[in-house]
Length: 272
Image (cartoon, rainbow, N blue to C red; front, side, top):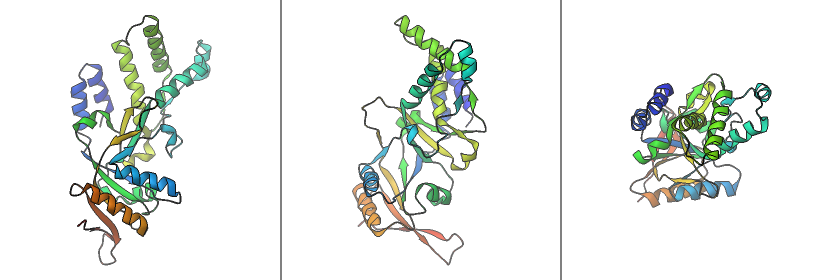
């Protein structure tokens, strides 16, 4: 997806065309991988969330990549020379980043058999993978991640936006069209990652969530894939979850087959 095309459609006053353009790059079926490790309480929380047909929305600070949310950078010394407060820039930047919650999904060609994703996010096949089907209502909030080689200098963008906010507050007026466009550019930094991650082909749901809201979205499972090394106890729990969503949901166990070139095969589990 070319984000310059998407942004230009937004800025030219064609949000519906922009969403249609973006939706063409997002399949309605996406995959999410879950680990099941040594923390029983955390394992239970993941299984309970799945049993409700929901997906947890994380804060940026909860991600495993410490560089998440840092696509923008500021020349703070130069800004201070121009009279801008370093703490103000940091506060506004943090506030914008923390006003959203995010769910990450995979759009890989290998789908449920994406070996690196099983290793990264399902603790070497001890966990599970869930296929979710999204309707058009969610397409507004889904974005293909943009993988960039370098961070973006954002001094002018941020200071102009702060002035926009100050003027709107002083005049008791809504944000101008230009200010809303700048806010969109800042919002889109939530879907920027370093180029070294582009093999993940990630799709993100980026949703504004005020403090106190439940950090979940409704996303019943379409298919559940149990990892090769998933414990018998967790297998049983996952099968029971699938039964609750049958016949709309099927469940498969990953198995190793010495007699084929693919090695990993899918074995469907009967829910009767």
